[in-house]
Length: 260
Image 1: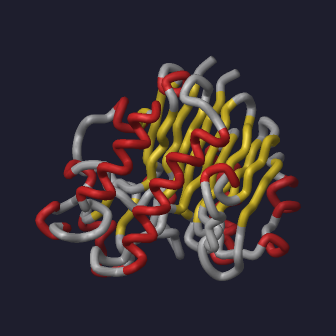
Image 2: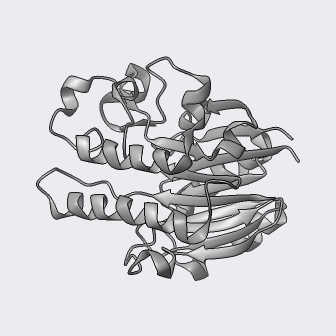
């Protein structure tokens, strides 16, 4: 079955819901993984999405963080938070996993890290290490498995508008990139990079100083898939149109089409 999978850090579903509804109607993804919903579970608009044809699962905590998966192709085998076998649960709502239409999907909102001397950076590194253990706990590199979302890591210098501005900074540090590489070594492929090798293809732009219009962005929203996914990937795009207009998220959706 052909499946269209997308990821989008919506940066507050309460604020962006009309935009998300419009985008779903236009793009028609089969699966949408969202991050930074910034809603408690009882405030998540599941009925709204159901009216659009989507089953959903949400792992939220109120005004911060929050992740969700919407699916037109069914949702089962749900794991909210890290799998117990991977270690202690995360106090933040940053990860949810479900099987959708034969593809296991994990929506992640990796901690930002803030600065290399901040405790949040060490939390980020621990979080990425636990994500690797989570993958072992819930799935296998031999199955169709997508790990997608806002990684808050630019995989290499092509993914940064000016690497000189990110020396000794989060998102580009050696430790973060090495942990991302360990995820790929587990059996994941950067599906977007499989199709596009050029630089200046970003998914996030700061709201300040006209960064979107000036082309000052980062590619930090990733779709990582196992070989069973990568072999089916026929098309991918960063939907820059969703970053335009009134009150957009600072992230654009990333969309991948998997053929039969």
